[in-house]
Image (cartoon, rainbow, N blue to C red):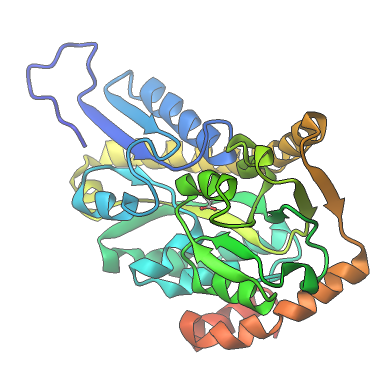
Length: 320
Ligand code: SIN
């Protein structure tokens, strides 16, 4: 938080929030961050300003959490896959392949008691969670179609820093390579990795279609986010400012959830029009075979996520 001093000019905000994220402005996260900025600035009459830094311009996957803990930024919205490495492996439950049948199943977690329990763990790391929101379901890309487990064998697949996602790639016979999001396109272009997974909005806005000849619509996993802030910063805000910021954030997250599907549909349409990349749909039987291949991951990673968390998850999804 930047506090420019008592004798500030009327046009200058008294408080400036810095919101850093790693994706493009035209993604669900980018648009939600921009909406948040508009709401906060309007409702505070310009007294509270918001600076949004997209595309890892300020901090990337390697350092954004630390920057938040140190107070160098005020808000970040990492994917749920990136909380495991700061000592919160239970967040990796969202990465379990083929866990959610649809977004309403995701909501049972993120808007229910289990989601709240996950957020309640964040103060352990000096953080406060303001809420969850979606990007959507992930697809697989490479320079070949990825329709059957055998298609993955031997490929180096870029993954986020999540042991669950790494195990998923291993179960398919691929080699997981953990890389920051901002490094992914270049790694694909130079052949450091052969393929990756992401919802189409991320694939398209990072121009990954220029360096990947095939996108397979596997919808095998979910990508979502939690918005987090620094606990000390949050507690030191005036209660009225905290309420204003929180209300604007809740509306921005609801907005992101409304537009996420459309953003991914529009990105897919743009990708089809660009004509650079073969887009493959899976048959029901192919999807079943992929699902069977990654089934052991749930058992293998139960210990990492935690038995109790897994029991709560199954209960919330009525998969007991
Ligand atoms: C993001 O959507 O924030 C990035 C996801 C990734 O690292 O693949």
